[in-house]
Image (cartoon, rainbow, N blue to C red; front, top):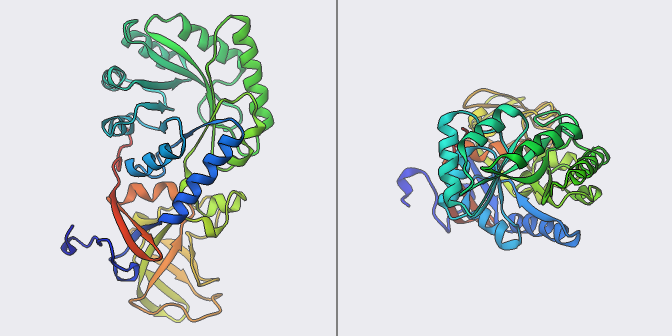
Length: 364
């Protein structure tokens, strides 16, 4: 990789690389992966990391090597990319609709040894039933809304009804139930899942998998005893939102965004070269767009596409000068990888490797 394309090479110092740039601390990354896998192993829970956070096959392999049973993708195009990278156990947690996507899903099912999808409505389920055949059935989980307020059937009775249709469809195999719960809703999740399991048992419908998920309640996964596996994504990097949830501290942030001070137009304002195309505009309940390491009180108050406006009125120390590089802790790490072609890894601020964001833009 040449210097001419602005990307660093192993051995470069972080302070010398072009910005804005997402940088990943190797040791913190490994520690995050190991800590969560150890927790899941301790509680006898299978772990399935969600790759939407990093979209990178190399990191997914680290997670698998640590003990994960498979991976979780959110869109069909992500599944294609990770299937091409050799991953053999993939759960797609999204309704697949439309002839074009269904045909691509059928091709994937023919070559991925353990491919599963989720459904929460009869329309999506009918498309699957019309597409797949008994010779190579598709594994299907029913998605349940246990408090997250997104997709999912609304009652255990509705989950049972949909599962019954799946089980009776020749080209489909009922694989279980799945949920993305609201934060702090473990009791609701367990109540919903336990009732669904009772209804399925009364109909002699086996339920091999009960899949729950989310990083915010990651270390409360054991409070849903009916669950057989847990899915999470953000934990691998961590960010301000997971810190706020008590899941980690800033010392566990593996990903930062480097930015350069490009202007100091007034004594109380600085401009960075990392706008919404580098940090995202997600506030996640915060009043600013990220924390600048080492400059407490300096607030990224607004973003344009290529500029971050920093309010320095409450920063008690002298802020970085024009040309200096600062390190930003983002509100939401999951969006960062999809904004860049590559990720820069480092140890002790020295570049160790550069990895392609394999599934960048894979959003359909």
